[in-house]
Length: 443
Ligand code: GDP
Ligand code: IMO
Ligand code: MG
Image (cartoon, rainbow, N blue to C red; front, side, top):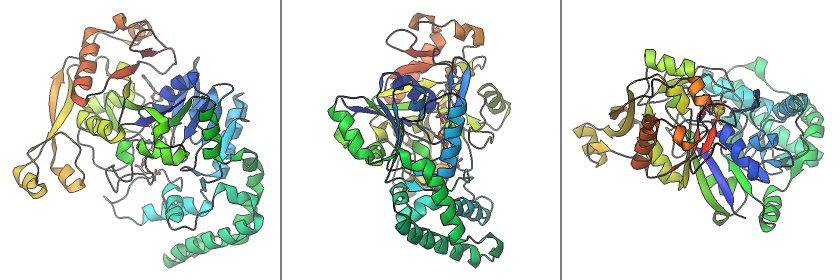
């Protein structure tokens, strides 16, 4: 059976965890294929809240494999913390699998993440989660990273830790931060100690997934972050250090591209962003604050307030194109209740001189590839009627498509028309039961 890849179409926090959990109901394995514990995926089941950072959302379904794939970076100490958290919540963790090819986030990566940010001047800081993601991927690209599979070989591990620590210390001492230098022996000892927790979960993941596909099993590839945080497509350099687009679902998990049949793009009914970087439809006013409050837009990982703005369909349209999205899942439509009118950005206007420099017209319907051009872009909005009479209780009553108010339907129609993809899943609350397969019933 072919796989489905699920990705965020904006700047993350679209509700991927919730939608993954829904799709996982009919899956045999859920696989994270990129990123690390910079992600924060919140899932609410029967009123109980689960917050996951590195463990795939499939862990909350029984009998299912929750797989951390080749393309991920994993902090073993944070993984242990998450396993403990799941145990406390009564969730089985035996089915959690970690790829032997995944890279390990080491304590010096976390430290370097902080130092690199500290050294950037105002306006250049990325606002990272300080989880060590960027430095770990740097070591991976520099071919000095430590992979989970190395934990099986203590001698090799010793050499690799020495190399990693020396490399980190070079940077730290160049900045005169002598008190922050790492001790190889201590790092190695701590790593060997934690490896006891991690080793039982380690497998050759592509091999395992191939076996599942051959046995007609259903696989969900769960993306983290979002298309606009992707290292290539996103608002570089205000991005994360991994590929968050659907194509990496194949390489980051280890299944071939032709094994992926469906691509689900998760879209929040408005736009949010955590951390620094450009945001064309940002609302730095009371409406933005209202959306932030109603949508509880505070980071799951860092608790930072998320910046909020109107839905930007230029972004979603580009996401649809970059990712071959076959279906959209629209989330948090309930949060917009009470706001009237609603503005939706459908294109950007570019001043003539900038347009000439880039050899483009003065109307842009795809997302600019360069931040200098993006800075010149002004959003063009379509004004929509809001569904101001709908409150939370009304959303709780929604059971079938006929219960969706006409104005919500108009908003969905506009999205589908503008980005040329169908909203197949509609989410109108945190719980599993507040989700609708648009072909029919609440899921
Ligand atoms: P992710 O990183 O994409 O998985 O998203 P997060 O979990 O970081 O943020 C999404 C937040 O919105 C979580 O707190 C979810 O419980 C919540 N959420 C998801 N879908 C809906 C929805 O349709 N309505 C409301 N009100 N909340 C939702
Ligand atoms: P989920 O999976 C939202 C942002 C950070 C920062 C930038 C780089 O929950 O959607 P990093 O620590 O990755 O080097 O930070 O990326 N960022 C996220 N924003 N949701 C996420 O994950 C994010 N993961 C990273 O805020 O701007
Ligand atoms: Mg999140």
